[in-house]
Image 1 (cartoon, rainbow, N blue to C red):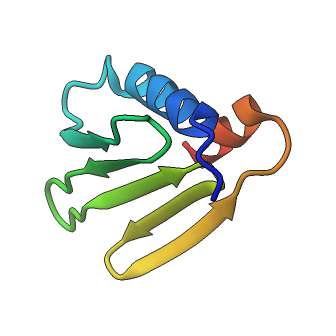
Image 2: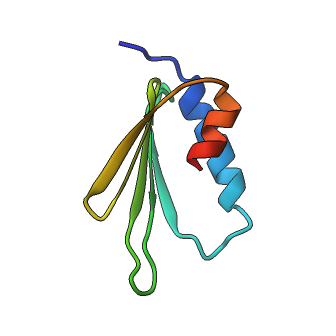
Length: 86
């Protein structure tokens, strides 16, 4: 099992920086103690608001919303990958 924390740590850093100036975005984090897995939930607001969830582990990111989900495996440059997912 791959427990490398690089992807999760980088994703958390970039996502927090991206939403910091956007106070209207309500979200919560669940980050494992060893930082190799995290879940970021963005709360839906307004109509037709829906929650968006990003689950990150060492192998990639799974995005889900309203019953839809898709897994994006980590490929290529870490920074470019995280930028693309965000």
